[in-house]
Image (cartoon, rainbow, N blue to C red; front, side, top):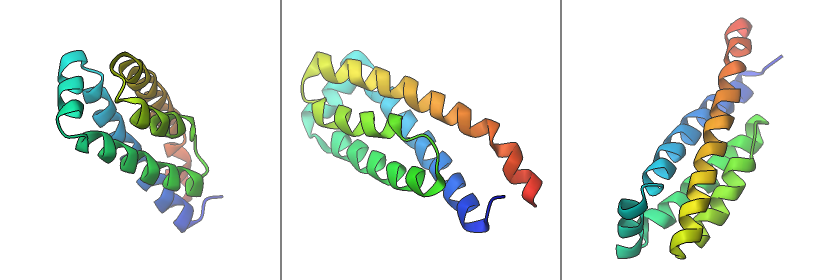
Length: 113
């Protein structure tokens, strides 16, 4: 059975993963993602922060963490254009997979209430 605290962490993890996935998909755009990250570096640091927060919630909720761990690495490696681009694509795919797996568990949360 889920506890109320676990449910809250689960919902927070899903929301933060969804936002992070959207940011990762934006960084996958070849020219736009490179241009934005090379100008200031702020979007890359925001991604690193978002992956850190999402990893914190994922650990608390007991859900998949692989996408966020690879995302932390991708955020640091995104200063290398081709490597960063490929890693952002991989992270986007992993986060989408994680979010889809979390939607399957949503029915369990609704049954508790």
